[in-house]
Amino acid sequence: MSKKLAVMLSGRGSNFVAIADTIASGALQGCHIDVVLSDKPDAPGLEEARRRGIDTMVCARRQYASKQEWEQAMIDGLQARNVDFIILAGFMRILGEGFINAFPRRILNIHPSLLPSFIGLDAQQQALDYGVRYSGCTVHFVTNDLDAGPIIVQKVVPVLPADDAAALSRRILEQEHVAYSEAIALVVAGKYEIQGRRVLLK
Ligand code: GRF
Image (cartoon, rainbow, N blue to C red; front, side, top):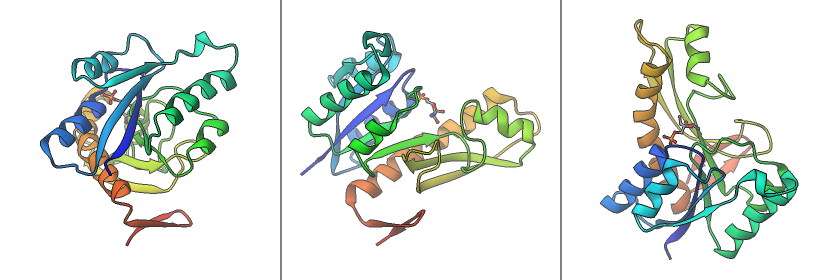
């Protein structure tokens, strides 16, 4: 049966669009986007989901008295839909243990650097400031340590002399759009095992 994906985003949603387009093209099979969930009621990615006829959910942090209640509302909403995988695509809040433990090994994130380098915010600027010659993106399983779960797919891009953060971000983003669908195809097919930190293809 087609696996249900929930995409969580806070902003423009270009990774969401790339995944949705890849599914629509037939190049990513065995799954569909069941719902797009955002913490930002005005996220452009939500509007794009509605335009495509995909269900949306909004859980703004400020609607809830505590982080725990906010996370529980999201857990309840996602569990009620029986989603198989949760795809973090520019979701700009850090999820707590309660949320992560509710979906063990079923939450994926994309980060715009070659992890474990440059975790956290502004990874592209961090790469420029450090002076690395190559950067890229990483799709990984989400664990309770920030940007540190087992790595599923990485893509490398060069850092060019004329780059500023915007130029490097654009080059990385092109690869993000390829990497995320590759990683989703792998987990949806279930042909992998996790040994320690390593995701090994079966
Ligand atoms: C991407 O750079 C992603 O790596 C990071 O947030 C950004 C989201 O971009 N986690 P978009 O909303 O998918 O366009």
